[in-house]
Image (tube, rainbow, N blue to C red):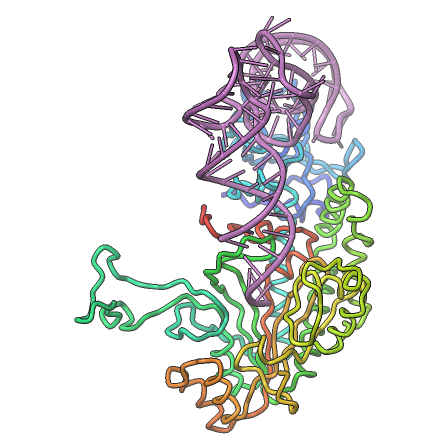
Length: 477
RNA sequence: GCCUCCUUAGCUCAGCCGGUUAGAGCGCCGGACUGUUAAUCCGUAGGUCCUAGGUUCAAGUCCUAGAGGGGGCGCCA
């Protein structure tokens, strides 16, 4: 194909020279002005057609959604609204688009409608902005860890472990489901399956990351994660991407510092690299919130909220301190909580987390040292034998964005917890080996990538920040 | 899995206490105009009122069940 210049670059290119651009028509105004977008940036290039000198049959084919190759001279724009425009000298229709049946129109569409045509929603301003921001965040994550000498570990997606400890799993099998091999006692004979054992899609790369950390010191994973829970919320997906750093010679405070530094780095990174997209998303959010009653609107605009997070230290407090605040809070005393806080030991509901983050502290909060009963077996026991060195990072509007802990590195204590929580130690001997052979204090956490994208873009449904969301009852596209 | 709301033209939505032939804006199509910015102006076409039952003289409207979607909760990242 002919060499093309991206729309993003043509805005900075020298005028009075000829260029070739390729992209998709957003609108064709006045039989004269083509708004061309190639996804390289939010803005469209205005290409000007001399309709009096053009073939009417060609003009007919310039419809919303059609793909074009346009050659012409770049000039300083004669109209308002853009700095430069391309005087189209030669237009080639690469792909026609029947405007009568093309679902996207030059108007505002609902997010619900666009979700149903997820294969086309990339072509909208909102979704192209979201996915450019998503890319920047993914790239920023690798840059953050690379700059700190972390090693990127590809933890397995198919796992033979049933005990990753994070919920329902999708089974992986090569069996013919209409003819499953069985043992003499009638049970399924997994020895005949592809891997010779029962296998699942991973729910966490943490255990494998720990193995890496106990040799490479600083590692992280960043990969797809699968949960077969029947979760129907705007914060859950069945297939999502998770970042899991794991650090040797680190305690809970080091872990909190890393989490806070990482989130702030990423927010800063996106503010610096996606200014135009964030400005657009901020405006979109503002328009959307105009529909809501005053009390439900956010107090800050998107970029203001992001900047605010950078400037404030995250509030760090223990579960026990949080319970005290909640117990004495106005909504608890007035019976406004659906689940009233009565005694120490109760699991916090999202209404409690939201109160702490959005009403009490009004900033990101890190809650630590939860009761051992409500946390996973691998978290390090505190000296009081009641709480563990867990940490949850809570963000406004999102809730839990990070869950992590200092790990139990003491062999005997870990084994005891596994027995208490009915984790089959014999199947986990490879994990226990790390505590047998040169164990060290270490810590790590899991960051839900889509939840971060939600926060940064100001979107409210997690299904809108992943290209093709998977959730109960839906695996379209 | 639980609670709740919604489903009317391609899209966004109105449709009153159940009562004639179901409406608007945008889009499409036709025409006018030609430096527009989701262009504008005029006109045409476009409907399984989500589906299946039921109540009624009469159902888009009421009732029951189902499907799809939104929001909230639980599980969590």
